[in-house]
Length: 83
Image 1 (tube, rainbow, N blue to C red):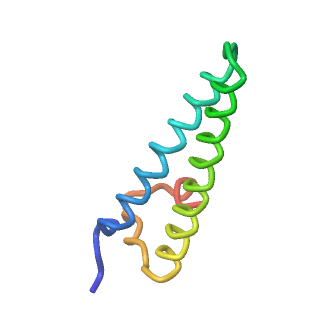
Image 2 (tube, rainbow, N blue to C red):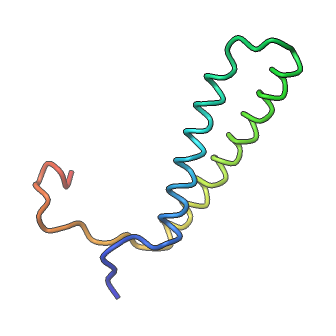
């Protein structure tokens, strides 16, 4: 069976990882100019936890990609887009 789009699992993993990366960026920007040491420590711990979660989701996504074929590329792609 040839699919014409990515599976729901691949799509959900993609957007979860994307959202977590955006959250990481926000945490990083928020880390500048913290008033207390406890506030900074808590933010760093959250930043680490989100980073480990991104790594785990990325590994799951990689495993999914290796075991499930992606949809074929559209025939309308130019040669430079195929590369």
